Image (cartoon, rainbow, N blue to C red; front, top):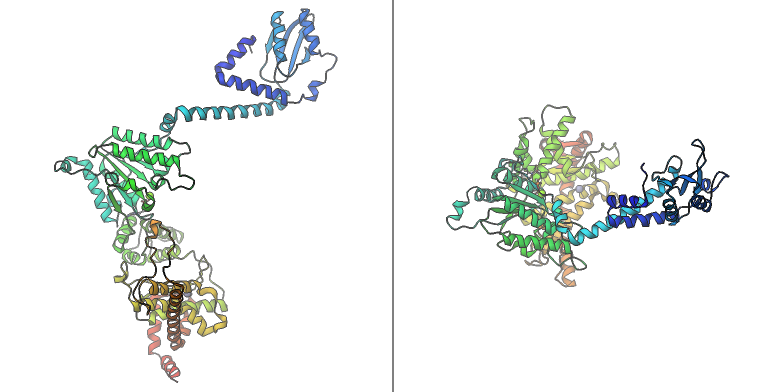
Length: 638
Ligand code: ADP
Ligand code: MG
Ligand code: ZN
């Protein structure tokens, strides 16, 4: 602690905090002074203490040898002339406010040794600290405010640049071989890679290298993966950034990031710029509620400008991915920007097989497992879901302490992903019997109908999400990806869906039917309605009464408009009801005619909880040959 004059104190403040802060510090100090009540212990004075007035008096008279000032404790310790070194110094309570300046002046004038002790010592710390913290928070808060406004006005460019987060990754470790099932997209992008590798080949015949390629498709179909594969294969620098990273709280930062990205890209050409989830910035401008989003619009404008700014053959290719092409600004899609649009759709049967093969590479799979069968059982799965499926199967295998994944684990994983987690089986009860009849009702109608897929299994092991049991089917090979339903097939689908309720009805009576069939009934209503209003499959005629709400993944969530009169609406309802009624009757009839067979299957199901498709068919076959069947036929013939 060195002795110093008032001037020096001021200087030190200046050098640490800067001029603006000194003002703040003073303000904080004054605030502190006026807010802090005097601690009782210090306010009390004993006979050793001097008053402020006495101190000034003593100074004037030259009686003061040395003064230590503790501004934070508002205290001065005074040693008077003639006081021995061992004596306790006299304490003086100082005034609040700026009166201390007066004291310092007096001390200087009379050449008294004084020392300002900034740090509060010992016991005083306990009450000084909270005040100090308060002042500090205040100061830091003010400083931040100050800094922000300075940045926003002058340094936005630097601010954005310093925080740009796009990465340059030459090695993603992904190759074209790792991407399967989306061959058209792959081919298109392979071409892009060859543009980068041998541009002369294309420019020689006057072909323009595409500036941008937009990958469009539902989530999990491998768009990001494909872009990474390009990075791995092209051998060119690869800048990747996600659209959401352009979106910032501060206006202008996104735009400066775009500028910066393109600057880097130009420096590193030939190269690839990948913008994932571009819909985050590329949305239609001026559609936001309350006048739109200025920041995003500026970013998008900058992106458009930059894409126009570089020449066609400069060696920068922009790849972007989105699953919401419908919300993209039209300006992004016009030729000269993203002039190539590649659809990356859900994989077909063949694609699924390819993807399964890719992900099976690094897993131990028993030779009996037929990936072909897995691909057949997973229509509608995306690449990501297939990868997840095999991973689930591997986890199940490990949990069951097996050496390699078998078909059992794969099938369990499929059920788990499509239906839900298995729960403990129900105890024997009427409820369990009802579920068994319901599910066998589905399975048996399906087996008795002309147009239905072969049964995979029927089970009454409950699953999460309120599923009491289910019957599943393996799509026929010709139906796996492209199913052109006929009128008769649709009717059979509805009949099958009503088989569960029909069985409850027959066995337990109309009073006992349950809510368990609600999803069946919803499906029936939807399908029957479509038959009437879209497929022209009723006596109302062959015209579409409703516009299909197609391409759900594209996110166009408009509500289908009805363009018909109330009169026609009630006619449609009548037709829908007729279809449902007719199919329900058929299901009832089929099951009633086969009641003994149904009872027998239910007995097996109650005992086993699950019946596989093959066993189910065997039970049916044996039953047909057995004397029970004869009896049954005779009985219904009565
Ligand atoms: P998105 O289309 O949503 O960007 P991703 O590329 O992120 O989907 O896919 C997620 C994961 O799913 C990938 O890392 C990969 O493991 C798997 N996957 C998706 N599609 C494929 C595919 N066509 N071939 C192989 N794996 C795929
Ligand atoms: Mg993605
Ligand atoms: Zn059902």
